[in-house]
Amino acid sequence: MKKIEGKVKGQGKRIAIVASKFHEAITRRLVEACRGELQIKGVRAQDITLVYVPGAFEISLAAMTLAKRKNIDAVICLGAIIKGDTYHFHLIALETARGISQAALTTGKPVIFEVLATGTMGQAKQRSQSKGRNKGQDAALAALEMIDLLSQLKQ
Image (cartoon, rainbow, N blue to C red; front, side, top):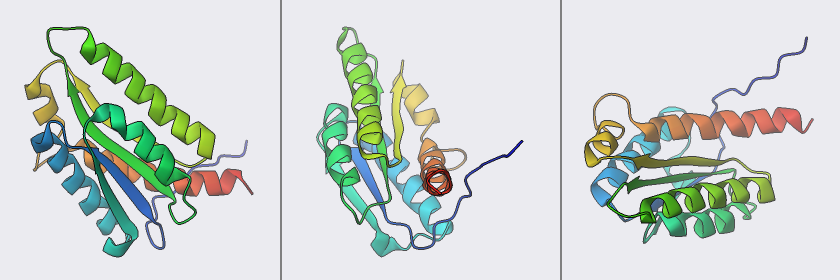
């Protein structure tokens, strides 16, 4: 059996981060953790492009546009959708996930989905802690691993 697995290597990689401005306190912590982890893994600060969009729904279009660029190896999508009293939460969460998936499948590049969809603000804060585990870190690691994995699969 041949095993193929991506390695987390940041040197020479060019990453775009698309972040929602809605629930900015949560998103800011996700972005900082993501950017920090990318740099720890060897991605140079000048090779990280950070794009802010108004809300989670707008992430998909920006992600697709960035993923089509030749000078971007992966796109990381960050945001927070927190359940309210209406069905709007479900619509935004599902369509954001669908759009991000479509960007990856259309472009053949890693487009990482780390838009938190939580029942409460407390759950979102828990997943975006400044100290401890932060889903922004997970997104950075997934992007770098997928760049390497896809490179191997194309050989």
